[in-house]
Image (tube, rainbow, N blue to C red; front, side, top):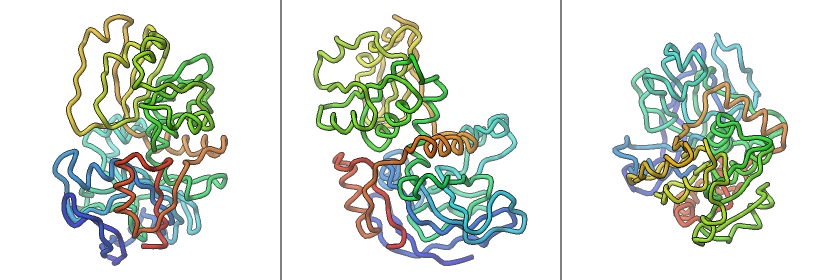
Length: 346
């Protein structure tokens, strides 16, 4: 075991504070990663504040991890000291179920082991990326291509793959009209990736406040959902709506914007229950679905795609001492578009 510095929430809803945690010794198939940067995801806030249910404390959040390998176990074949690597939302899974064997570890039948706020197979708590380093099995680590700087790559480990996976699964590309609901941490990557895939991209946001940003990121159109005329003008328009917001919506209104056989896919998780009327699905054989991150192979595919197309997150780099202020700013939608911690400041 090794003692390392980290930022943790000691209890639910408590401010994060600097502390020390124990990391396991590097095992046969493990890599030790010196964390250079860690993104702040809205889900970190949900879990620290128990918005999604009871959680384990002390909690070290962070599942957007970018760093450099500093040690490898004797059986490691995929990575070497000095490699630039990332870790996303999960650090293990059963490896035996059909989903795991298919590279869909995020849908492991027994549930994946999450990067933080979970218990590893050895019975110890998992701690995330708001820390100096992390030890992870090589099979749950991905390589960050040289074309991506580590700071803008970190958010791709959640925000990037969370949007890339459904865009690929629902065949976003040339000839397809895609709407992205919300232009935040996930939404801005959804716009970039959908544009790079060749789709015609529309942002649906509460106001036009970020319109210039949206168009620069690759959107072809930008509409305010606070204007009722938007839902009249865009009725029956989209093949795919990617909903990135973590708040309840008027699903009937948004579903009316789908073309025949269109799908609305949710990647934001509100803390409150949501309501829909089935009638809103009947008209054009519409689908309402969801998507959870991506498996390890698809996460690597996403990183390679982003490097090829020059896609990194739009970030605001902060010191670890600013984490609590950053949380409040995320809740106030006062970030463009992802806070990233400089882990050298921990």
